[in-house]
Image 1 (tube, rainbow, N blue to C red):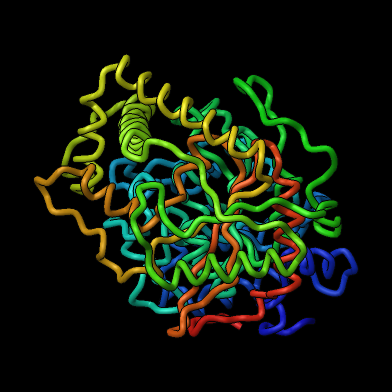
Image 2 (cartoon, rainbow, N blue to C red):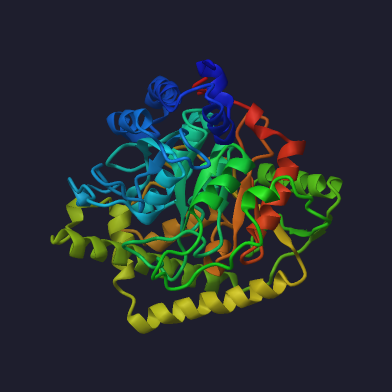
Length: 479
């Protein structure tokens, strides 16, 4: 059997191939992954529920002959419900809730042959760009355990970065896949709106801001997994344009000569960390080296209107989330069951009338049209993913009694470009090609046209071949 160290360095595609060739069994892959979780999770707190018994039973049984059959996998403790396993969304309010049915996404993961061995940490209700819930404690960055792993899929990103598993589920309402990917030095793609279904409980979420996918160490794993789970579910309110061919086929395809715009300043004109500027400029030079046309440009929009509209829709959306759970659980929420920031932020959400909410949605849709016109002349928009390298834990601590929107402004300065793709529904990816002199990853963001993950996968595959980031391991490494 391949050794523990070697398995930790293999991506999911390679592990699945070992299973297909019968060089390793799913149970052997699983036991190696469990050993890796046990080795490093105490240092980073990425996995908050262990599903070892269910995983061993699944690995011993006959798994579906899916594209990733036998590969160990972690699911984020948010949105994706797994029947029979505790589900908290990072909040004490859900108490001892245990789902009685799988989410559609979990069903599709199972059909792909994945073996679930645990659930990853998330901030309360997935609110914020750092994973520090009161319920489970903070997830620590494997590159520096005093710093954030990002949020809200911080547990997933840290687990993949530390070598526990090659890929892990995440979701994204304002950067929650891409921000932790950038913080932890892994690949993270947010697909086009409605590419991945949200059933059975939801049609869309927060006027289409939320998307489901994963964090991976390789680009090909992201493409293979998206192939396995994408496509509409019966009854979905709308769906993404179908791809011309499988996403996995894009990995070896030529990217052609793309017109790539890049930005080193935020839409407000505010400066960002020199490290993040260096990261984008380095990526722009790399793209030019790969044969693409690279120009400095960005859409012109009203930054303040965008921030207020997006934050208002987000606040109302998370308030709805509490009301949704109130209806499902049959008990009223009380302040003592929530963290002060979440309670205050959703309190602001309750202040919006239905017309005010729809006005904010209208503003986002108008801005989306402006951004779409920008993409008539550009294939890809390259931006910083972070405004500064991963910040120390506790940076976004909330002071009770203050305006929660002001803390959101601080969070937005840390993630200055992450919200665009959620507002517009476009696919966007965080690509880890830059580390600071201190050894902290600083990923860049690439946004594609609506429905065009294919171009992003082709470009990412080019970049990965030129800068193979998976060879870099953090100080906290399971191999």
